[in-house]
Length: 404
Length: 223
Ligand SMILES: Nc1ncnc2c1ncn2[C@@H]1O[C@H](COP(=O)(O)OP(=O)(O)O)[C@@H](O)[C@H]1O
Ligand SMILES: [Mg+2]
Image (cartoon, rainbow over all chains, first blue to last red; front, side, top):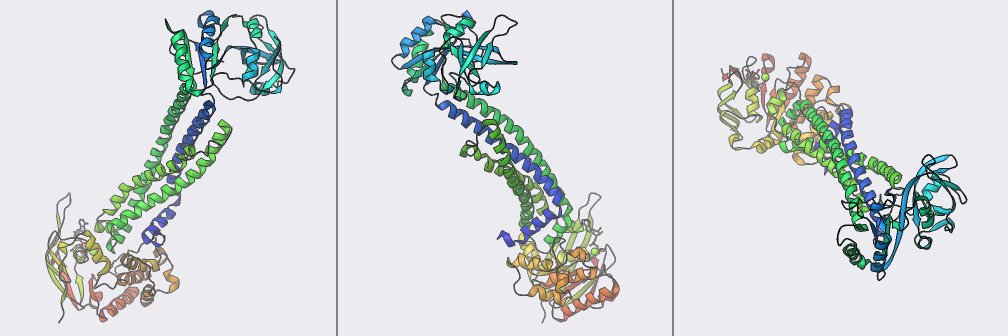
């Protein structure tokens, strides 16, 4: 029907006659659609990727010293909490935790410190973990090399290894020489990539034995964190409550976190960010709407006489209305289609760049933002076109004909 | 024998303006029969176009009645009046008033498509264009690529495409040189001779001689 509809073809011709103006108006829609779609896709991909990574954390709990306010979500390992007396988990507390956990799984301690390191002439910072050497074998996977056996050997995370060009046998000087003595350790293994995690983030870290750690930083009988692995997922809540009941009976001494809180918290943060940025992107659509409105009003004003002619030879009001709505729709739909294509490209580049994989980009929850943004863009165009079209259709034929 | 196609009864048209109302028609009564060729003459500003717009249903009377083929237009809504303009009235303007975005052919076909909701496959558009002397080559041109005379020929073809009962012409030769005017008048006279009802506004006494009857308007009234 629309194919040989003369009203539609008048709209197309009008857009073509004022091509530059129409293209500029469509450009606004393109930008708006691209902004909304790529931000939406980025947010969705990030959420998906985080949720995915954290799902294998579902059977884990972390116990950290209570720091008031419930301890931040990143307040765990690598947070540089240090091992000062007031915020550490004592040996006694660990034993209590172990006693509770035995029935359900295992618990192990973790010491961590952020410190300056030197490799050759390269300086940097890294997290240094102190772990039981047996536990290390259980929870960490060495990609090349072996697990540390002595107090002078360590394993390092793959990101750190790459950044500082560390190999098996490389020497790392830990500590700031200006502040005291340094300790030199030897790399005996490089770990597999582990990703972001709540219990232990090893990709950018140096991991040595408890003895090594205490040797450098002291803190015998004190831990920064206790990690709990529960064998049956259904017992997570029971274990969590039991630890809290036992250790926080008189006053809050520890914070027990499960991954659901972290997942929730990250998802929430990402979605708040995404919504906020998307609202800003929405403003660009508003600007586009103003420009479409302007173009449509110009088109109506320029064509008053033509509208008079069309009306005088028997064109219905509804058809004039249709003609201008079509015009706005053409600009909107063309803009939205171009916007969709561009946002697929830009979104892909951003997502692959930020997350490193396009897997989440093509997930329904992410790709849905493209048609959504298109619909919003095109709808805004059409809605914006209604008033100018309505004005055109209600012009008095005689006055329109007398218009110069 | 002949019946009134157009009948005006005491038609008044007041233009309300901020500077005061202008009464362009002060009670005009008029009867035009089928097949008649009527010329409306009068000085500029006397209300000729206003009267023709009333007959052409482009406008409504402030008071009074207009009957077209026996039907009172007062009882019609905008939709019905628009349909009347599409199917029963052919309008030819001094300024040609072709649609700039459409070619000559498409201009003539436009009312046909509006009426029948399909393209002309009967050859009618082509025949009408041939009748007014626009060949196929010219009919592909846009109005701004045509001379005034050519545009008016296209406009006549367009006015005829839906076989209207009435043909209304508002100074059809007003923007044309005398040679071209003559050719246009020949076409109109020919249409009249074939039974078409014509009402033509003019202030050229020479073109008025083609008509059967001349009505003179002065200051919004038939003189
Ligand atoms: N749209 C309008 N609004 C206000 N006044 C108008 C309008 N059209 C015509 N007039 C006035 O009505 C009178 C008759 O105009 P018109 O019918 O165009 O005269 P003619 O065609 O005989 O030259 C004039 O005084 C003119 O100024
Ligand atoms: Mg006039």
